[in-house]
Image (cartoon, rainbow, N blue to C red; front, side):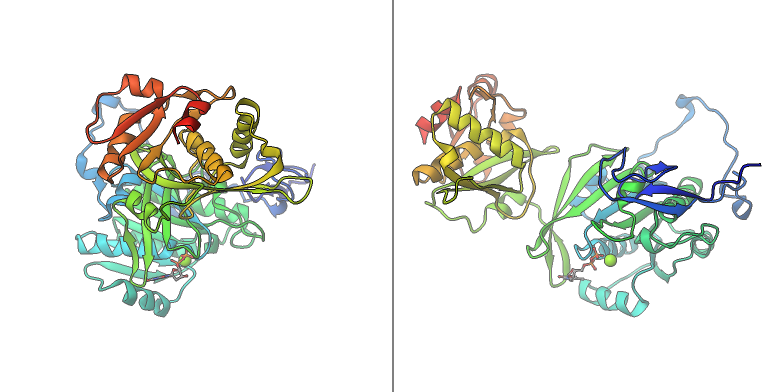
Length: 455
Ligand code: TYD
Ligand code: MG
């Protein structure tokens, strides 16, 4: 009889499973991510230890299912509620990913604090920090009132017991990479452990109607499986991102079964923990140099919200044969493309210049509506002529140098008016379609050359 297979190869990035090793993962195309791991034992599908969790389900009509508004709990943070799609859905599994040290534990502890003072029962399970460490952090973010319980534990069977005993409404698992199950023989943090542990949490969440937040560290190297391995198992995936040395953090929805993705929440890391930033535009534009060449204010739509930001470009004569190009906070290939458009359609000799493009404030924005702003910032820096600091610019640029329409033009213009801008350069098509907005001079352009003529 053939020997039963005991190990398999898993991709640390995406969790792809394969019988043989490969240098490149066939699924996500990452290199050197396949590792050999024991396969999890198949057990009886109705778990013996948790007879109550897996209920026998019966088919029902959708019309018999009732939805109540109370099924959603507000987190107390408007920024987070928006990303979740107006609050936490009971019985949902939310993954919060991000680089180590970005503030995931701080955010979730603050959410627990708010939930507990609003009268909800919350259980915070940490596998990384001792109770003393948590207490130190809690002291920084302020007083904790209400029913917030802590547990330092990494064994999932014990955690399951604890959840059953306490029966909280919300559970936080601080770092899935520290959790393990006895019946899986690989080390905590390995692909199969992370997957199997999440599976149990999924059963707990769905079976008991508990909302579970899972923290997952993003790791580039090392033996720890990344959160992408479990993206498909959870209901909602949020990524917490930002420059570690800049103080603001962006919470971005990547997947959401209960609301729109691409919503963002903006927070600022202070001495006393994370604070919400209600008006990100004002925040991103603060400290902007007036009268500097190469700086242009653009408007990007994130989810349903228009956000104003500053696009900076620096164009300098190249010293070597190869021109250098960098793009921080936006797509590198897009910047190259826009420079090719400038070269071909407007006859600027861009290949003789190095170009550096940056979105100020350490945020990442990839909307095509930023194209026109990037182009004008490049030209402004090349000519060393500042653009009117009270003017905002948006529009998509096509390969033949035409300026194309973007969505939600009116909202963008209104946001600009709110922040005191006096002029706006936008696609002509958008100008023709939108209603009149008071208090701002609108200039429609059809192609890049017209736009350059305006500044
Ligand atoms: P943390 O939540 O521990 O990160 P993660 O759980 O994602 O690994 O955040 C740690 C960082 O946050 C640390 O560098 C210090 C900073 N911080 C503050 O600036 N202010 C605060 O009040 C707290 C609690 C942390
Ligand atoms: Mg942490």
